Amino acid sequence: MGAMSDIQPRACPIADTLDLVGERWSLLVLREVFMGVRRFADIQANTGAPRDVLTKRLRSLEAGGALERHRYLERPPRFEYHLTPAGQALEPVLIGLREWGLRYLPDPPPAPRFLHTCGADVVTRVVCDACGEPLEGGGLVTVREDGVTGTPPPAARVTAVRR
Amino acid sequence: MGAMSDIQPRACPIADTLDLVGERWSLLVLREVFMGVRRFADIQANTGAPRDVLTKRLRSLEAGGALERHRYLERPPRFEYHLTPAGQALEPVLIGLREWGLRYLPDPPPAPRFLHTCGADVVTRVVCDACGEPLEGGGLVTVREDGVTGTPPPAARVTAVRR
DNA sequence: GTAGTCGGTTTGGTTTACAAACTTACCTCG
DNA sequence: CGAGGTAAGTTTGTAAACCAAACCGACTAC
Image (cartoon, rainbow over all chains, first blue to last red):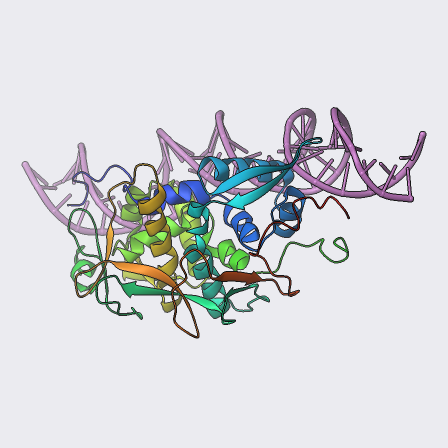
């Protein structure tokens, strides 16, 4: 069992999204633009990315539709980077990473805040799309395209190689 | 100002979290474990990660507290990987990436589903922690530690070549 | 005219990724 | 018994990516 037809990596939007934003520095570049930093030199300084790599990331984020490159000065050519609506839609990912770090890193660094206009921090919630109920640890089941469920008890497979 | 104390990259839990889960394959490994795939060979097949890299990623995810390595057979030694509570807490990140892909990729692939026990898909929502109001596009302000706000109008800076 | 800014590109060395083959230790089948 | 398979890696050699630093062109400020 197992090697029936599973020779290819799984087709999945998580993987495809990571092709766009999963390379090193990409999400940190987006973090900066979210925070209002829009120029090459500032993004470079705040992320620490090497300049040539930063150039590549900015180009691929632009090509992927997350950023737009705007010329703010004709001669010499100077540019600013802005979020597209698609880029803004990556906010939950950034917030999720931020929250995880604050909660689970051994020594969380000072955190830039993402605030609602009312003054409080924004947070991610994973909720059921239908009933709106939040998931906290339990209540989650993953399903692959083939219909096999994921999260339930590990008992069945544990003894699959004898005992 | 500017070059006063801004020589270092920004201290930020997003960056620190990405040190743990931001390398190539790491989040796909977690995706698999979320979906109930727990063994080396299966994770390798479903992600497509090279075997040696997968070994390194599993070790660093374990060291980072997201996974636990569990021996299910003494001789020969065989292992399964399980999510820790910290690992489970990365769920919003995965869901966020999945949703973004489904919505913004030109040709979204068939998506493994993450279901609530009631049968509906789970989704991420970024909400205000205080008033619970969801953010949709607007209503967001980012604040850096130094108090400078991020998202407001880009008008002021556009012609600013000073400094 | 000297220095500095900005948004890169170029250069050369180091690190990492990658595919494929190999290893160890079992188990199953005929 | 011996051949083949499985599982979780490790080893090997090569290709790609990353990185720091230097360089560049077109300006501006002094």
